[in-house]
Image 1: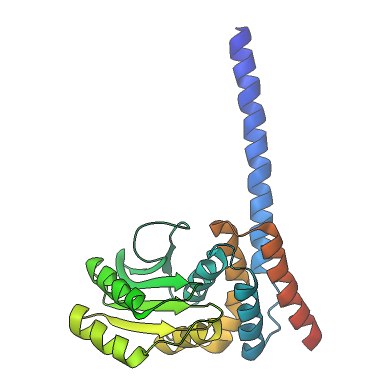
Image 2: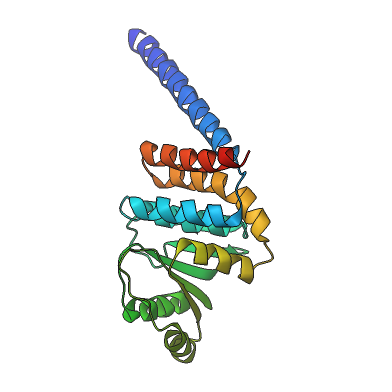
Length: 219
């Protein structure tokens, strides 16, 4: 009986701790979704570029950024765990099937990275792929040549973006999402994806400060 009582007490204490943790997470999520969005598109592009590049946190900021951007336009967006060996850091699904595979790089890359992505996308049954590069000192790739080869060899339409703003613009063009909707939705969804992906608390706080500071300057 003493053991039963002790077990029940421990279980009750654990449940209370978990409830407290969940309440904190829910509060943080609510605050994230309520981030001020008094920004215009150029301001959003600017602060996103600054934030993603200033401290990639091992690629976490860039991957969470791409997932959040796609979340502004698509319902089924899967963000793979950091350093996952499976192809595609971010995937867009339709009825459970992979239709768009995105590889995110915050380091300089060469053309072979794009060709490897096209091959991996085809292996997943996807016909769309994107290589999102957000890195200092990156040399622009020959996009037309890469696109033609990916279509010829893998039957995959491969797009390449080489800045955060360009990726946001591309998503707007490829979907029915307006830039106004992206500006309204993105700040909070990025905060949510960063928390999910393990971006540091100081990083998430820095993002909120950037958004709030620009929004306050316009009010």
